[in-house]
Structures are given as structure tokens and as C-alpha cells.
Image 1: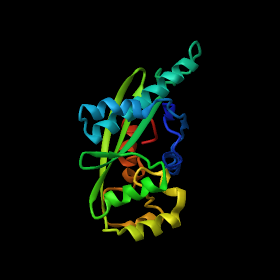
Image 2: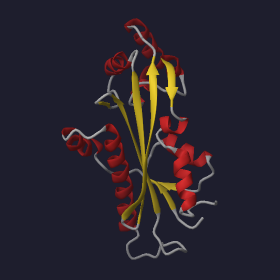
Image 3: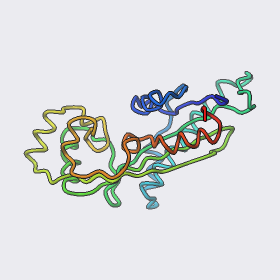
Image 4: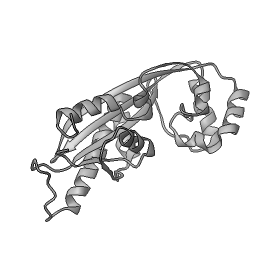
Length: 213
């Protein structure tokens, strides 16, 4: 490998995906205020896809800047003479123009599922690669998920079973668990749904000679 790879995320799912793919990397959470970045974008009517792209790039830039500051005065360049290649990623969930955020209570999770019931919503997963002060590549993948019609009593029973796990994801569901029972159709790949479109990312890392091709 000719680059040091850094994942700008503390997400255990994104780390798991890269590790399972056999990628050598380190990780660092990005110190950004996502809501503060989203607010002006939403005010100007930015699409959910653009919001995800801006946040992915902001995370990559933030971690790249933190690494540069920490290594100031040290020689940490790779054999190519380039700095670390930082992977930023973000995901938004949208239903039409509405962008959802993680529920903060079971009552809010119930409202999320009621709003999604019987409708098709979209997961928008963005990636940005940042190196030497600039974004060298970006990508957005989408998945469309159709939730079956749910009545309030079923939603309440479902949330009672899954408990606070419902508060850990933006849609108040986990497809890898009991949440799969909420759906009747899914269009899109597994990696996009988990928030890291792995196939286009691996293709680009190979093109950049950052991983073994």
C-alpha cells in the first residue's frame, strides 16, 4: 500500500466494512457540528444528496486538518511524498423533501415509522477522499426502501421489542435485525444502506494505488 488510509468516522459499521474487506486503515472521528452545517443547506433548499456530500467532505477535511496539525514539524509522508488519504462519509435519509434525523425518544421513533409506513424513502450515502488539502474524489450512492403499511399498534409492539436500538439509526430501524420485517421491497446495495458504498470506494482506492490492485 502506498498511502496511509484514515477513516474519518467513529461508526463501528463503517469500520467493520473496511476491516472485513481486508483494508489496513486507522480511524478518527471528525469534530464537526453536523446540524450547524446542515441548517444553511436545508434553508437554501439543498437536496438530501447534496447535504450528504457536503457532510462527507467536511468530515474528511476536518480529520485531514487535525492530522496535519498533529504532525506539524514531523515527517509522516508516504513513499509517494503525499499525505494521508482521508475517507469521509455521511448518509442522509429522505422522504420526498423531508430529511430525517435520529429519533431522540421512542415517541419520536414511533412518529418516524408512522411517516414512513407504506411509502418509499431514500438513503443517500456519500463518500469523499481528501488528500494534501483538497478533495480528490467524491461519490454518492442511493438506495430506495419501501416500507409495508404499519398500524400504530404494530409500531408500538415493534418498538417495545427493539427498545432503545430504535434510537441508534436515522430511520428508527435496523435492517440487519428485526427491522427487516418492516419492509416489502429494497432497491440498492447493502453497503449503501449501511452508509459506506464500498464497491465504488474500493475501485477508486485501487485506481489511486492506495490498496493492492
